[in-house]
Length: 224
Image (cartoon, rainbow, N blue to C red; front, side, top):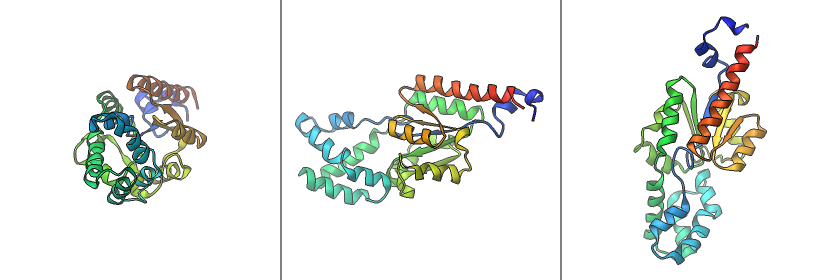
C-alpha cells in the first residue's frame, strides 16, 4: 500500500506501529538491593551476608519464577542467615515498599499512551509483589497487557517468556520494542528479533526509544 495519502498519525500509529514492552524493576520502579539493605540494617556487617543469602541466592529467582512462595522463602532465608523469621519477613516488606515509581519513566509511559502507542509490561516479579503494587500505584492503567513471571512460572531471560507475551497479545517481535535494564534480558530479546533499548536512565531511554519509533515511521512513510 502506498502511504503517501495517509496522515502522519495513521502512518505512525497504524497497525504496523511499534508496540513497546516495559520491564518494571529498575525501569518503571526503583530497584536497588544495596539501598534496601543500607536502609534496613544500621549494622553494615549484616548487609553483605544478607545480600548473598537472600538477593543473590537461587531462591530469589525461584520466587520470581513462582515456584517458591514467599512464606517458604522467608523460612529458607531465616535458616541460611541465622536471622529471625520476623526479621526476614520485615525485609521482604521493605523490598515491596522500596519499589516506588520513577517519575520520569512514568511520565514517559503517559506520553506514549497519550499518543496511542500500545504499551505492555513484562517483569520478573513474584505474584504477591505484583498484587501489592497493583493496589498502590496507578501506572498499571497505561498497559494494554501485563505479564508477571511469578504468575505464569516463566522467567526472563528464557525465550519462553518472550514467546508467551508475543503469542498472548499477538505481538510481532520485529514491530515491538523491549525495554529492560538487565543485559541478559536485552540479549535474549534481541536474538528473538525484538527491537531493544537497554535502559540506563529515563532520558537515555526516551531518546533511544523515539529514535526507533521515528525510524519505523520514516520507513513506513517511504515504503509501498
